[in-house]
Structure formats: C-alpha cells, structure tokens
Length: 134
Image 1: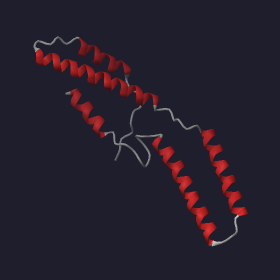
Image 2: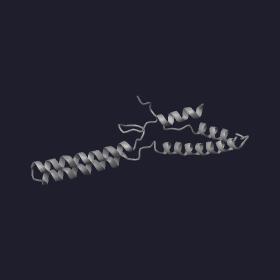
Image 3: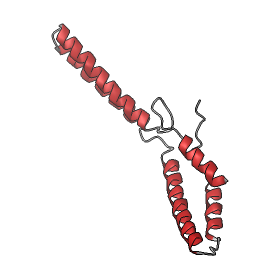
Image 4: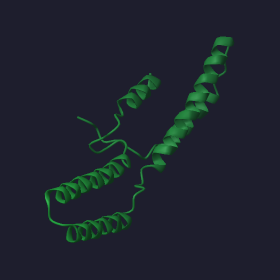
C-alpha cells in the first residue's frame, strides 16, 4: 500500500544539510572527490525538491476542463444528430468518445505523477533518503 507523499519539502532541513556538507574539510584527494560529488548530488536534490514543490499545484484548471467537456458534448451530440442511425456511425461515435475520454483521463493522471491509477513509485526516493540519513 502506498503512503501519501508530502509535496511540501522542508527547505530549512535541506539548507542545513547543504551547509553541513559545505563545512566538511577533506583530508585527502579521495575525500575531496567525494565532497565534490556529494555537493553536486545535494544541488540536484534541491532542484528536484523545488520541482516537486512547483508541481504540487495542479496545472489543469477546473474551468478549462468544464469548457473542454462541454465542447466535446456539443460536438458529439451534433455528430449523433446529423449522422444516419446505422451500426457504422454508432460504432465510430462510441470509439471516438472512448478515445477522447481516454486522452482526457491520461492528461489528468499525468498531472499527478505520484498519485492516481498511473502513479510513479516514491520508493526509490525514500530508499535514497534513508541511505543518505545513515
């Protein structure tokens, strides 16, 4: 079972960790290389954290979705009224309606990458954070 993802990153903790990393004083060449890699990874992690915070707000607005669905209803009602009632036109309308509703479903699902039916697992990130915490 998936745990809910906290999309509000603790910026203060990230800044403290980065400051602590900067205060390390390497004693040999290997430690210098490791500090450089850790600093790069910390910067990448900060960028990812910022990206998650920016994506926590839905990008598809409710009024736009209502207008889109209303247009599609008008279009499909118009097609069904004007088309002759036979098996081919009914089948084409049903297939078209499923294709359009599937596209809208995918747009709404991909707007929430860590939730919904098609979700990205957060386990790799959680495991990496646990390894960094050790």
